[in-house]
Length: 615
Image 1: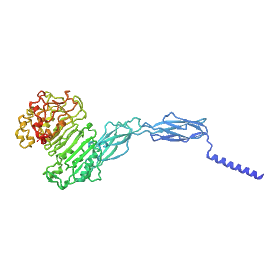
Image 2 (image 1 turned 120 degrees about the horizontal axis):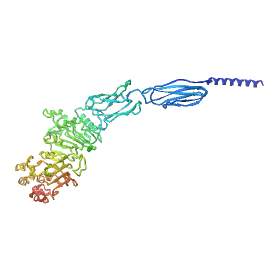
Image 3 (image 1 turned 45 degrees about the vertical axis):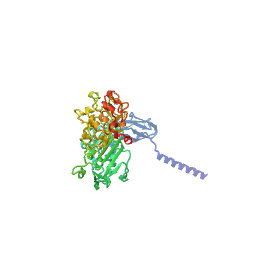
Image 4 (image 1 turned 135 degrees about the vertical axis):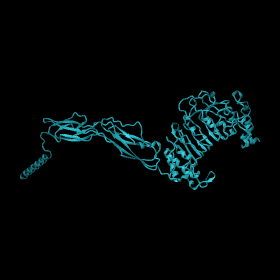
C-alpha cells in the first residue's frame, strides 16, 4: 500500500513539472498589442514585412490601400501577418494604414510607407566591343536600356560616318514612373583602318521636372581594327576571304588550305608573262584571277579589293534579289582600274593597272563612280544592272576605255518580264535608237543617246545588248552618213589589209555605198529587244554577220513584245529566208532593190559553211 502511494505522489510531481514547462513556452497573453507601428518598404518594386499580433481574442486586419495584401487577414489568438506591397508606379513615396481590431480590446494602426522610383537611365552594359567586319545584315548591335525618363541619344559627330541609331525607335514609358526596359539598335560600318576606333554614346535625360534628378549615362563602344593586309600572298588570301565574308557569300573557301587549290582563284606562276615579259618574282603566288559568285549584299564591293593589285581578271556575279538592290559602286575598284600606286615601278613611275577583265554582273548597280575608267581594260561585263538613267554613259565610253574590246550590257532591265513598253514604272534602263517614228521620241522617259554612242565605238570587237528595253528602228545607211553622225561608206582602202574572205565583198560594199559600222565587230547581239523597222544594209552585209549567229542573236525580237506606241515589235519582213536568200526583203517593204537579189553568202561566199565542199 505504501508503494502505491509513493507511485501516485511521483506521478503528481512529474505532471506538475510538465505543466510548468508548457507555461514557460507559451506564456499567457493578456490584452492586445502589435510588435511594430510602422513599416517602411524602400524598394519601389515591392516587398514583404511581418507584423506579430499578440492577443487571445478574435482579431482582423484591413486596409483601404489596393496595393497592400494581408495574409492572414483574421484569426484567433496570436499570429504572424504578412504585409505585401505591390510594385509602385510613382516617383514619390506612397503611404497607407492597416487597422488591426481585436474583439473587446480595441483598434491598433500600422502605417506603411513605400518609396517610389527615382528618375534614372541604366544600361545592361557600360562597354561594348564589336568586330571590324561582318555581312551587311549583321552589322548592328542592340543596347538594352531601362529607364523611366525620356532621353536622347547623342553620337559624337566624328563617329556619325560609321555609327548610327536606327530610326523609328523608342522605349515606351507607359506605366507611370516604373522603369521600362527596351532595346535600341545601332547600325555600324566596316572599319577599314588598322587602328581600333572608339566612341562614347551618351544617353541624356530630357523633360525632367524641377526638383527631380536624372544622370546622363555613357556607353563606350570599341570597334576592332581592320585585318592588317600585308603586301604579299598572305595579304591577298586574307583579302579574298574578307571580301567574300563582307558580301555574305554563300560558300566558303577553306582558309587552312593552300590558296592555289581554292576554286575560282588563279595565282601568277613563275613562267607567266605580262606584255611579253616574264613577270617579276614579287608577282609569283599573288592573285591573278578571282571570281566571287552567289552572295547577298546591299553595299558596294568591299574595300579589300584594292589589295589585289596584280589581278588581271575579277568577277562579281549573282547578288541575291539584285532587282531589288540599289547599289552605288564605290571607288575601291577604281584603284585597280586606274593603276595601284604601288605598281608605279612597273609603269615607268606611273601607277600601272594589270586588270584586263572586269565582270560586275547581276549585282544591283544603279551608279558608277566618276573614276570608273581604264587605259588597259579589254573586257567589261555590266549585264543585269539596275541603271535607270544615262549617267553610266559618262563612264562607259571609248574615251574612258580606249583598249576595251568586249562590252556586255545584256538584260538592262529591273523587271525580268516586260512585254509592253507602254507600261509605266521602274522597268529598268529605257532607251531607243533615235530613229523611226518620224524622229519623235517613242517615250519621253527613253534615253536617245546611248545607242548611237555605242555605234560610234569602232574598236569594239564584241558587243552584247540582248534582252533589254531598246526600241525604235535601226538607222539606215543614208541616215548614218548624214549630219550629225557622218559615218563613212566603205572605200577600197578599207580592204587593203583584210582576208580574202572579206575582200570578196569589196566591190559590192563600195558600189552600193554600204556604211562602215563596227568594222572590228566579231560578235554582236541585239535579240529580244523591242526593235522595229527595216534591217539596214550595213547590218545585212556586215562582213562578219556570218560569225554573229544572227538567227539567234540579231533577228529575233520579243515574240509578244509591244513598244511604247503599242506596235508589235519585229523587223519588217521578219528574218531572212536564209543567208543566201534575202528575197523576202522587197521594195514594197522599203528595202533597196539590190537587197532582195543579194543574200549575205552571195556577197561573201567564203563565209558559207558549204563553200569548201562545193569548191
